[in-house]
Length: 145
Image 1: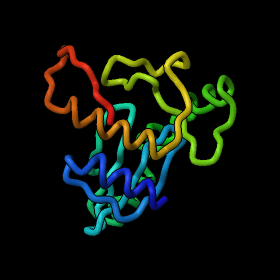
Image 2: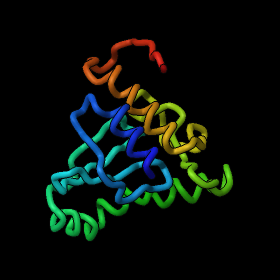
Image 3: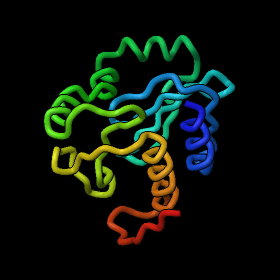
Image 4: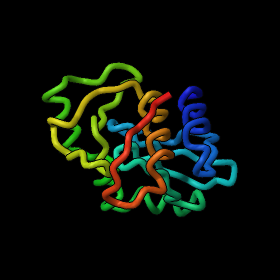
């Protein structure tokens, strides 16, 4: 998981987050990580966002008992359908939306692929940085380094 922490800290640093420990990763490459202040953040690659989800161990434990959060986190139907169509994931691999939802990609099997987790986190952080200040409907080109 060390290379995942490096990918977060390099490609999401513009958002002023710093990962110290990976807490959970779901099958669509969403990551929950903890920083040095015991705050918990979630990176949602398909929505090109990182957000604070809990500001203490206690609030994180409460969140893990929230059925709405768990349903969103587990993505059970999409994961099951993706496995049926694309097969099981290999080590370090996750499912992803080929075109992120916020860029017009649909949560449908036609838009699902597989990718190595650190690549998804790196790529989504770069795209999020390049699009973060654009108003809705703006046309743009993405440059990946």
